[in-house]
Length: 266
Image (cartoon, one colour):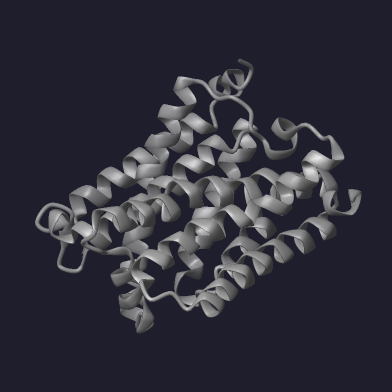
């Protein structure tokens, strides 16, 4: 069991967790053949996210290890929460513009529109279920698995934080299996890894992950709300983009400050 707490074992275990979650939810769909897929698919999304971390939580419990230490569930104070939100908003705006630039070079895959339709529904109950699976649950479960468990194992095993963040983030981008989003996901993963390491907590990376998914969810459902003040000729408005860059810089400076390091000691 201690093998999974080595770098090689952690990569292997996370891969198995992803395969287990994917096969289980896909098997349910094929086995049950639900007539109401609009309701069933959001439920499998929620189940899939929970299954990502279920094996890990089971093993930690069986090994009698400390959940807080193993998964980086360390407390953060109000200042770190505020700085995390500030940095996250700026980074997500920059990432959005990066995707728009990439779309000028590479044509978006055809299924991307279908994915947007999946996120966008009229039924309020289904909308809430999709939101729960795609935003808070995805942020919580994926950060537990990747920044809480995997990255921390890599840091300790390799004794090299830079290598751990770079390769752990690359792995995170690759397992999403979407080449079109690879650059954006890798950039976000690097920043989430940095946030988790600096604060020794996965709560800041959960904030960035949740804000990113939340904004994507909002675009899919209420795109007209962003017209006129956020969108500009197929790009992010220069004013909004400038503000995003500014607050991202401020956020990074705050994260790298000595004061933030002191704030880790609550």
